[in-house]
Amino acid sequence: MPALLQQIMTLSTVGAALSWLAYFQSTAPVLAWTGCMSLVFGYSLIFIVEFVITRQINRFDPVPQATWQHLFAAWWGETVVAAQVFCWRQPFRANVITDQLGPEAKVLGRRGVVFVHGFFCNRGFWTPWLEHVQGRGNAFIAVDLAPLFGSIDDYAPQINDAVQRIRLATGLAPLLVCHSMGGLAVRAWIKLMNGQAQVHHVVTIGTPHRGTWLARFGHGKNSHQMRLGSRWLANLNHDLPANSYAPFTCWYSNCDNIVFPASNATLPGAVHRLFLGAGHVQLAFMPEVMQTTLALLNDESVKKT
Image 1 (tube, one colour):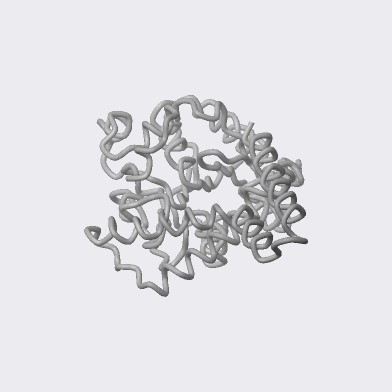
Image 2 (cartoon, rainbow, N blue to C red; image 1 turned 30 degrees about the vertical axis):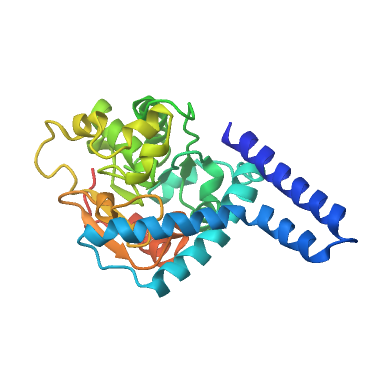
């Protein structure tokens, strides 16, 4: 579903931009190119609004305040990366790299990875990560969460199936790498299906663990669950044993244009890694984030089974 919707959105935008350009090119070339670029990069103008709001909301958050240089770098980075993700990888290349569960993984003793995407995304989000893991020879599964606008709890069986398949293929508990809402889906799976004993470590990137201000504008059930102070988030944290989040690493940014206040992407007792000057989608593809996360595949000092 996300792939189809993003195909329609991308092709419609490109078609409208080219039609505008063709219609006005001969009589008003400035208007032609201005309108064409506005249609193509209109999403980037929305990002400007998001980053301005982010800076205002984060004034009351304990994270280091973003400078205007940080915000500009994050805006530009998000503009480039969002186009790659939502206009190419997810709509047209979601399955270019298939899941890898080779029998040699168990023989070689290499730990596997489960990738869990966020809201309005699919497995194509992780393509650069899949290329890296494929080159290392590790087993991996990138899930496609469904339904698109359903309850986050509904994703738990899909995550459980992926984890069990990786464990069977490798004989080892997997590393879970999650972006945005995907981190909440993994937490829901852990609580509903006693998943904590089945994972090596969980890395969340830009996950609204304590909700996000921006979710007030969403209308799906999962958007409601990600709102600040939602009942679902309260229930997710209710009656948890002490040190439940020790096997978590939380990456977050002071320029996250989707999850803010910024510190809402952290968990008590987890390892926290703050990245300065990266947007919400951009954060997942920063080399430092990718390299540090994948290094956990060989790190036996983190929590494991």
